[in-house]
Image 1 (cartoon, rainbow, N blue to C red):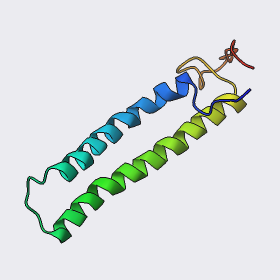
Image 2 (image 1 turned 90 degrees about the vertical axis):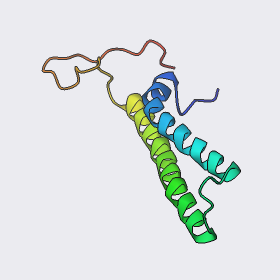
Image 3 (image 1 turned 135 degrees about the horizontal axis):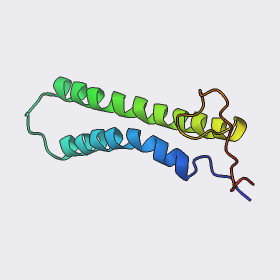
Image 4 (image 1 turned 90 degrees about the horizontal axis):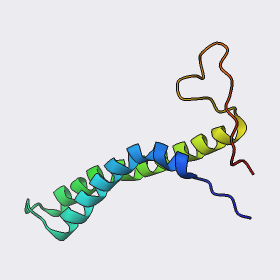
Length: 98
């Protein structure tokens, strides 16, 4: 049986990064289809670097944070939200553990 790297809960944690990725992707595609600024080649390259670099870095960060979240959930005890630092808090048991 194959195991998923990103389960449903991890994907929900990562949706906060998917929205800016979509916005950056929208502008990359939009500016490649339509050039509203009539820029030269140097300015055009700079424009794509300023859009593409944050997109690539955020995509890498999202993947790495997703792997970190997923591996931590598998190896460490899971607490209720906000209860990890409370004295006497007990971890919850994962019912769908395989």
